[in-house]
Length: 281
Image (cartoon, rainbow, N blue to C red):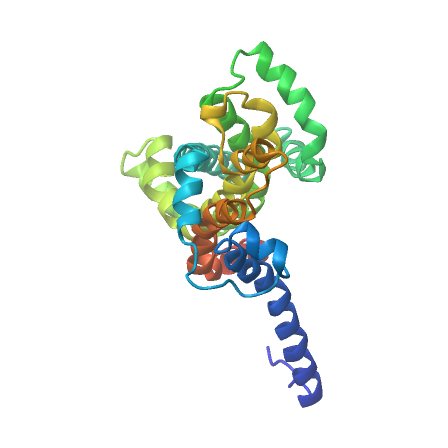
């Protein structure tokens, strides 16, 4: 298919708009980094967007890490994010594979039921989930929050993966069965490796989502030792009360942001490619 050449004026305006949008996205990050290197005196005597004075206060990061237990929050977040990502991957891949490759009574209804879950606002589920998890006695546990994150990630992941599975030739499954492979063998040894681009895409999307999740973690985790980074950051602000330490507060924000920003920068091309491929297949 031949695309129509873009008018130079249109290209120039598009480039300008993209540059403006880039500045709008990058500025808060740069602003937060600069503020994380200041002390309170610089905040009170100048503007919040002023450059930090020398020497830069890198000690704000170690101070926040140690005094406000950000090391603990960091490890909790890694544990919850990794566990949720792996479980979500298993649930999503098996669900998408069955709905894409096997036709049974009610499969269409089940498919649209999963997709309809994408329209439900997360905030509406917080209170029901709290009571459900209380009844199941998994409140304030890593297992509970991992299960919740994993289940809520299935509809979106399934939407992306189902396109991959539908395009895989049936001859591959039939050949594997003739060679003696079981259903599990066909899935794990043949179909799952072929859907690897989609699996990588939804893994990255889930990691970005789980790392920054705040509402469920705030309600379901009551023990401060189990807080994740977003909840820990809010807890840190509450601890300061009337003596807000702006530098350490922004340092905590950067500690929470930088790892996930690095992951996104490295894998953003795979996210775009995976979503587009899953949508058009």
